[in-house]
Each structure stands twice: as C-alpha cells, then as structure tokens.
Image (cartoon, rainbow, N blue to C red; front, top):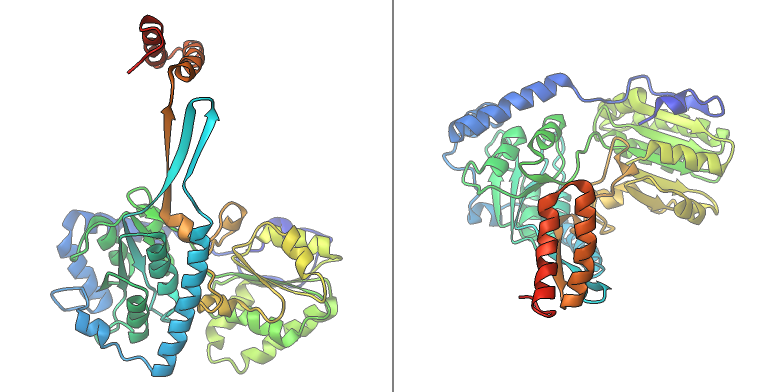
Length: 440
C-alpha cells in the first residue's frame, strides 16, 4: 500500500517502514490458474471432479447441498440472532441505496427523448470464503445485496471442510440471505463451475466475492466471459489519528486487519510523533497476547507503516495517495474536515467508536467488498448499483426533431468518411421532405 513516492518524501517521518515489498501479482499463480481454467473448460465435469477430490477432498457424486443439509446447519441460537440482526442492517442499507437509483427519461431537445431503465443482472454466483477463516458476513454482501437489487437467481459456492461439510455458519448465512442454491465447491474450480456451467450450476452472468490469490486471479482471467465485482487483493487499513487518539484502540484496529493475512498492508498516519511511538509500542504488546499473532505480526513487520505528518493537510494528501480499502479517522475535532476533504478510500470509519470490524461483520449495514491495491482512486465498493444495468433508449417523437438531428448526422458522417452512417440519416430526411413531413 505504501508507494515509492511516499517512502522517498523527505517531509514525512516514518517511525515504521514496511520490511517487504507490496504484494504484487505472482506469475506462478497466474500460470497455475490459467492451466486450471483451460483444463476445466476443456474437460468439464471430469476436471471439476478431479479438482474437487484432490483439493477439497470431495467424494460425493453431487456438489449441491440438499434442503435438509441447509436447514440442518447447526448454529448456536445466540449467534443466529446476531447474524439475523446484521443481515437486517445490511438489507436496510441496501434497500435505502436502491431507493436512490431510478429509471430516467428526459427530452434532450424538442421531440428527442432519451432515457435509461435499471435492469438487474439475471444470474449471480457468490463465492463465500471459508478457508483459513470462515467469513460469515460474506453472504450478506454477495447474496443478500444482489437479491435486494432484483437479481433473479443467486447461487453460492463455498469450499467444503475435510469432513465433507461446509462451515455451518456460512451455510446458515447463505440461507437467511436468500441463496437459491448452495454448492460445496472451493477455489478456482468453484469460479469455473459458475462461469462455465459445471457441477449442476447453470452459467452465471456475474461472479462476486472475496477469496485467496488464486480466486482473485481466476476472477481476473474470467472477466469478460462473466462480470465481476472487484479484483480484490489483501485486506488493507489506514488510520488517520491525532494526539488525542487512544493508542490501544488504534493498535487494535491495525491488528484487526493485519490478521486477515500475512501480506495485509496496515498504516497509521498521524500528526503526533508521540502517538505514533505509543502505537508502535502498543502493537508489540498486543501481539504478545493475540491468538492470531503469527499472521498479524507477519503483516505488521512486512507491510506495516507509521507515518508522521506535519499537519492535517499533509495527512489527507498521504491518505489519498494510499487510497486504502478501509480508512479510519480518530481525531479530537477534525473528523468532519477529513470526511469532506478525502477522496480515495473504499469505506471510511469516522470517530473512535467506529471500527472496521463493525462493517466486516455486517453490523453497520455497509458492504465490506471494497477496492484494494489503490483501486479506490477510481472505483467504490460493491453495492446494489453494481447489479443494475442502466439500459439506455431513445425515441424521436416528431419529424421536425428527426430532421434537425438528421442534418447534423449527415454532415458529421461526411467529415468522418462513414457513408453508410450518413445514408441512414439522409434517407430519413428525404422521406420527410417527400411525404410532406411524415415518416413511418
């Protein structure tokens, strides 16, 4: 996440620099994924079953979970309540977003009508990660949100465990979010099954959901055959904080994202050198007690940074350069200033009470599928809008309007040398003149 320009900026004080290079595309991963996709496309069901057996340990004849298996997913009653509450929050926010999006029709000039209809994608495939950590809230973002958008069919795929089952919390979350079908297929082969139509799945129009480097690369290579949500890399966080921030909370929030994986970039941007030093010490202390310290410490050492800036304006510039997936702001009175000033981030968390984990688990209602790798410079995260196609249309209501624009099209086409384009307009113009102002 830390760019070379920032590392070389002499006006910035680095109390902690990343020890490793930023995670980049691994050509070995790209090559392996390419080989798998070619084999899955060529050999179809046979290849799918080979990979399911060798990589997932799946021996059953079918991949789809039965209704009894879905309904029988054993989830603690208290956890069920928490999942249902988060599901409700995500649905409420998605429905509010949907209400802001509407069809459009406008008369761009007298008699010339243009508009768009927002039409949902028909079939979506949701990949639900359940490898190192089963992310229970993923279904809220990738199954429920497209359902709110009006998608007709959403199928979910999740990797099975070695005992031949999918994590019950993942299954339950998919069910309460309205997944039409749930399949026990993991990794690259799951994305291939959804894209090519294998394992009992009809081909989908769009694939969404996070995953490891192989899943991300498969999405990259399948894009075009199907739509995708984002090309997401390792999870990221940046925190802007001043001298009033609580070092314990700042350190905890940095480690909360670092535990996603050993290449997750985490950064503190602060206007206070004292706070930066206190957070550095607090990270070291908390790592001694953290159950996932092996992962989080690797991310912190390899991809962690503490940057001290001279003022809030510089802090904002540094943050926009990073364009982090998650951005927290913890200041005494500048939260609103940063919110108005900042432009590049996936989702922002304002004030010490807000933490990324609240969104990760669906508790705030916002979508946690967000851009990484500086992509927040040009795109936002997943939302109902991503599942809606703005299909445009045009209509000419009377001959005078058609004649006026036809003359322009004839002239422009002549300059371009596109004779057939010009003819489509000229012939209509001739008919109006021949028939006394009436065309059919």
